[in-house]
Amino acid sequence: MADQVNASPADGVGALAERLAALRANGDSRIIGLTGSVAAGKTTLARQLSKRLVPDLSVETVSTDGFLFPNAILEPQGLLMRKGFPETYDRDGFINALVHVRQGQADFPAHSHQIYDIDPALTRTIHLPDVLILEGLGFESPSRPDRTGGEPDVLVYLDAAEADLEAWYVERFVGFWNAARTDTASFYAQWLHMSEPELRAFAKTVWDGVNLPNLRDHIHPLRDHADIVVRKDSAHTVEIVADRMS
Image (cartoon, helix red, strand yellow):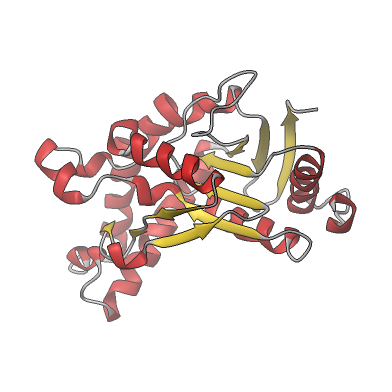
C-alpha cells in the first residue's frame, strides 16, 4: 500500500502520506492526530493527505473543533475568546469518541466557523476507516510506549514560523470577514463596519492576545513529543523534519 502513494523526493505531502501508509500497513496505526498552530493549514494538509491515500485506503478526516464546548458553556465562564486553549475542550467527549470509533463507529460533533459555535446539524457518524485523520487542537502529549484507546496512534505536528502563522491568520480572518458581506448570519458580520486596514489591525490584536500565547504555552510544546514533525515554509511547501517512529 505504501508503494502506491508515489511521492517524489521534493513532494513533502506525498512523503508524509507514504510514511503514514507504511505505518498503517506495518501495524495498527489507524488514527492519526494532526496538530499545530491556528492557521498553520492543518485542514488543508489533512485534505491533501486523504487524496493521496485514497483509493488504496479508506480515509475519513475530522476536525477536533467539534470537541470545543458550546458557547453557552464557554461564555458564562469568560472563555469564549480563549477557544482553542486546553480548558475549552471536552476532553471526556474526545476520548470517548476515539474509544467508540475503534469499536466500529462513533458520532463526531462539529464546530461551524459561520456561527462560531457547535452546530448539532453537522454531527457526523464515522464508521472506522483504514485511516482516520483528526486535525486540530486539544491534543495532549502521547503516552509512551503504549497508547491508550482514547488518543491517536500517531501524532503529527505541523510546524511553521510565527511570522508566517500570523500572516496566514490575518488573511484567514479577512477571508471570513469578506464572506460575511453576503451572509449576515456569519459571526464575522459584527466587524463589517470596519475598513479593511482596521480589520487587519484588529485581527493582529486577536493573534497577539489569544492565538500566540496559546501557541507558545500549549501547542508548540507538543512538537517535542510528536511522532512526526512536518515543517511548512512561507510558500506552503512542507517537508518531514523529524520521524520518531523510525
